[in-house]
Image (cartoon, rainbow, N blue to C red):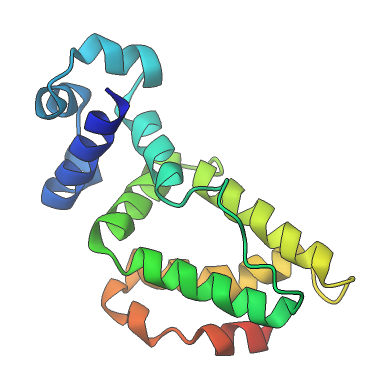
Length: 161
């Protein structure tokens, strides 16, 4: 069921945008009973936020070559590559929109990854510095200027750090 719901949400967001998604629409597209979706997520906002997090698996290994700068560049490139795929960008925008004033699961995961890089830096920078100088320029473009995402230079972002 989970795979069919994820696929349905991805397709519907790509077709209609996150604001137009309802649980009955997802259930119909996924071929599942809407009560199953309500039981798992409760509402469309929670479902979209959860799926935005799923798309970039927080359990995946981060680059770890022993060179923090090279690892950060590889990580930034991974983010750029991931969000260059239109449905991934649409799901991120949807997850950010439904998070409202609370921190999205996706941001929480990026913060944890940033903190891991900061810990490797020996105090040269903080996790917030990584978010501000590496992640924020990428996510800003994904959300507000998606057609310019290819212009983000991972090396330049890391150099700013």
